[in-house]
Length: 416
Image 1 (cartoon, rainbow, N blue to C red):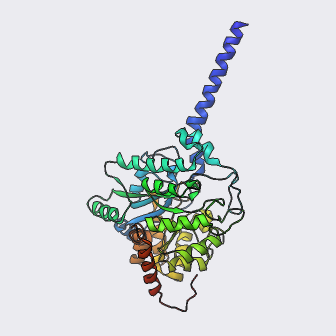
Image 2 (image 1 turned 90 degrees about the vertical axis):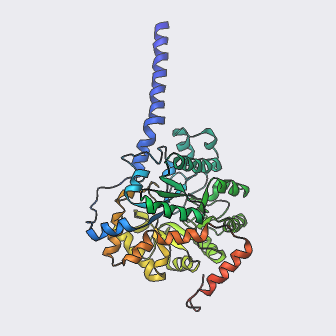
Image 3 (image 1 turned 135 degrees about the vertical axis):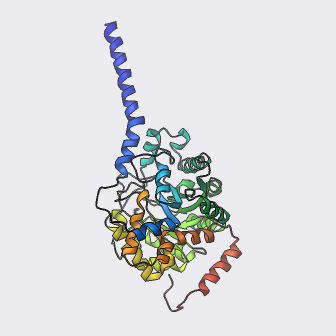
């Protein structure tokens, strides 16, 4: 009997060790690889003209969720859609990395409750620091610290962007070494504030320079396009918005409800962005922007990032991404369209960040001029960051808004 109990105990321990090995070592990269697929669908044939132009571009993308996953950004891996080596291969000059801190079970575009959270299980399975297991604020702070750590060990290859002066330094460095790139830290929903506006200052200290108010559910700041109530800004959301504009944190309307988007546009004193998504005119999905919302973003001087996945462009074809970009250009002008990949954001794409030549080629095929392509691929983003990252007083913000109002070409055009 003792021998039997001994072997039974050993068997249980071995089973637990095998289970732990699977859950904590094997499962996280396996889940990530299955969540962020790159298909083997046909890609565009790349011309010599596109290759030459692409190497001259400054490329900036407004949204990636790579920080969500266990692997380090500077690891070269054969799964997922983005890492530092592939960013350099794709000639990316600046990547904005977002922090995802909560997603609901059964996540969908139509209606989600805020009562569940997938990221808690992910944080535990990935063996993240225990402080992040049950705190959305700590998760975002940890993501910011991870990005900073990658920059510190990159030997100058990855540089954090937190001010207009950092952009100037980045451009000067890239003129000498085209492998050097910038990274800016953003947030996918400010439920990470946990209801305390003082946490905004703490996250700013961690590098936060862009954020949306919501993700896939309604929260204390605003309604989500995918929430249950889908309301406008709350009083707390308005307070946070005012503070963000003063601090120099760019406001992102991605995932916000239609009433929240309308209110943000009407209140904005600085350019706002829609960091990742599409337009309803070419892909009639509820998370995409209506023409009225596109005009509103442009009215603030802002920027709309177009993605490459089904929910954004109704396919994974770079031709359809270019069509969405063309619609924005034709509606409000070339200054208001950019890249918003959502790479590593639980999406399936036809190409990864090393293959951004696909977008350059698609834009050429769609008839964009070289100067227009320069603007779309990164020039517009540089302009927005220069305008949005400088802290400003309320008086300075009001003067800036008044100046923006004076730039309206047609005063008869409806203003959101």
